[in-house]
Image (cartoon, rainbow, N blue to C red; front, top):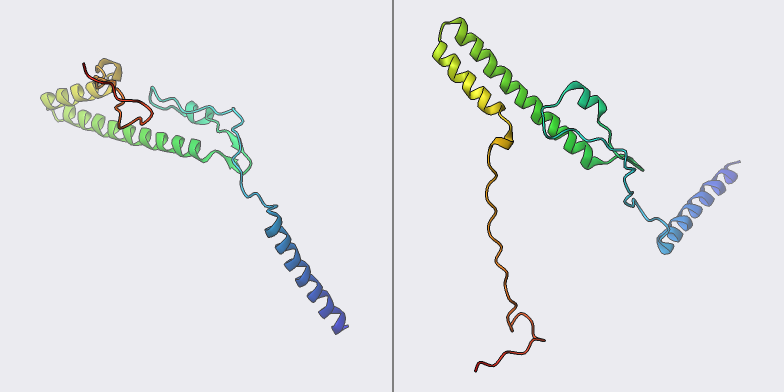
Length: 152
């Protein structure tokens, strides 16, 4: 009985080694290959604050091993930003209410104006001008196939 068990263990070890060498030599393991997205992604809106329905409606492209990591990371970053923004807005509103309760109307008005200016749409701010693009002519040093032009 002991010899039979030893024979089975040796046979399994030899079979494992032969299989491993065969896979290495044949290159039969392509590893993880990129998979095309399935096109069912529904991203978070980027033009307004998030709502509860936006989070529940969000979908990600599925791939062989799960969801597309870049889409999930982007959605989490957007949600974290929005949560932080709303936390700051709540702090400003609480300070405004406290100023009104204490009778500090000038401070409350300043807080209200700052809050309204922060909530104004970004479209009201003019975009920064783009730097001009200056076309460059290739020189003889850049293109050896081009012959120099003689001056008259």
